[in-house]
Image (cartoon, rainbow, N blue to C red; front, side, top):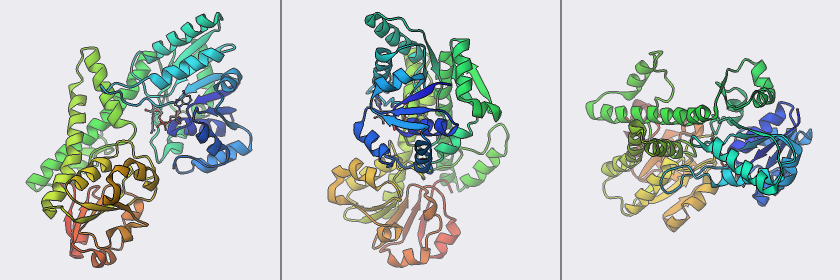
Length: 440
Ligand code: NAD
């Protein structure tokens, strides 16, 4: 097996590169961000993902993994080239393909023989064909003719458990157009194949749809339980019991039935919008997905209403925010519900004391416009000290067993908002707090 290249060394690219190197393959990770590559070469990982730093270190040490900002070198040396660059939302909700197509063009500029170009970025149906066109056109302009194959290999990893997910996937999806590409891709994933990971081999278009259809379905499931939770709250039902009993039905499954402040992150929000856009483009409206994105926005605002209606006028009130990343075990704040909640609380007059175990760096620049209305604190106890309310937005493990007596004593008023339902109402109320959660 020749060398592999991974274009884009972000959450997906870095994990893909490091894990494939750990399978014993030779991998070159590429990024056009020189600073990022320099940092990684110095042994510093620009993102927080548990286990990633030591995996990169080990595989670099054994010379299976290298990093470069020189696309030419990487393309010339590799047979299989993954595209793992971002596909951020454009203004109309569609996925912006400029990075993917730029990389495709760069690959074609330096192709020197047969290559497999594997799209790992999440992209709308038809992108594989576009990438093919861009590559063929560029080769034509160069006046050279190299064979190549396009593969769609969407990634399903979750930030926070990305290494486990990459090495223990529920399935590997391969959208292919030739037997040669299928054979080589199975060779790339040989370790998983031997471990009997199911492989779904299909055409490009189907593979592209699988990724969006899966993410939109998960977002829809979360949104559904959020709406059921809101109803439970009104009628005196307990959404945890509802979700538990629903989940016992094998047709439903218990996963993704946890109510909260709405989904966020680098995938669900943009992928649902892009999928809905695709439906509109092909005049097959995905109305369930459209409703999901709308209901999710409402859910975040509902959390602010919950807080404001319990506390009353927020002008000049100091509130503690615990957890701002879009979920625990990551530093990623892309489209985190905390961003909507924090901005709105400040608009309503509150000042905020914020603590997140990994989110401070990203939080500081994403919330810099709020100036001295927000303060980042050293830990959860300093954040709640003197506060009128504590608001758990992200369920980091360390927030699950806080010293409630100590917190009670240090707070000014005793409002306890548990937007992830990680506490037992009876226990929290026993300490004297006013407890608010979602759907119970
Ligand atoms: P990211 O923003 O963390 O990383 C993208 C990287 O690509 C950046 O480091 C950027 O500098 C680099 N890049 C951009 N243009 C480049 C170019 N022309 N040449 C070389 N490098 C370039 O993004 P991510 O979270 O890793 O997501 C990548 C793709 O994977 C997206 O399509 C996303 O939807 C998908 N995805 C993400 C996750 C996740 O949990 N983050 C999971 C599954 C799929």
